Image (cartoon, rainbow, N blue to C red):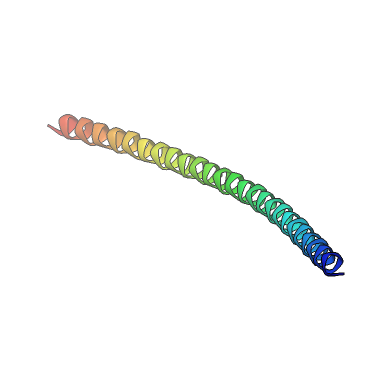
Length: 93
């Protein structure tokens, strides 16, 4: 009878360990899936942030180009005014 009792206890312990291992495996699999989803989401966020940075850089570039064009126009206008003023000054002499 003792041997049967010991065998039943060993069997019970084995089943308990197997169940525990299966639960641990399931939890590890679930954690792995969650980590994968989190990494995928982080990748999407990074891509979106990079695209936003590129868009901002393009806008800044366009603004800088526009400012440069305005500055060039102002310089051309100032050059013409100086040329006219010089011509008038020379004509008055």
